[in-house]
Length: 244
Image (cartoon, rainbow, N blue to C red; front, top):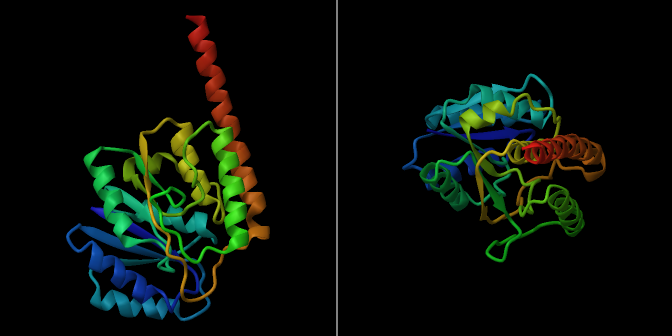
């Protein structure tokens, strides 16, 4: 079974459209959708209740630890699928890529599949220019420090094997930095993953919750913490190799 985690906060105008879109594209894959309400103050909860009456395997959870990190950790713990993907409620992710993800991780027995929106095969629309510049600067810095060929660490939309994902808990991030924490933990712990090209369609309804100035400290903290772990492992490996 595939579990699709959708954390949401004040997304009443997007939820129905997003869920219908997902279900129409993966109707042949056994799945459950877990919607995690992160302290919404609009009518999102009523919208989810209406959707759950006519859609099977829709699970609604209320976040107990405010923020995306807490919402995703709760969703992971409650998931029943063998594979878990995280998608945004704003329908910015291309559902066709979800099929690619599932086929790749299932057929190749991987721990994770990371999508990149920044390859020559990707299509990206409606990406704010300032956010794009900062995204490329930060992701390429992470790529350099971790000596890795991935270039889209901060992208939310990835897929993981459930058993592997549980080993990455607890989640330390409070906000969008969770999307940096999870792939870096996969890399630092030498889990098996592949990278594929994906598309990004952009939000068409509502306003993004991502506020750059408020989130930089969280990203920096996670980056430094996991980079130290990465360096320690490399030093230990070199020491052990030279010893023998």
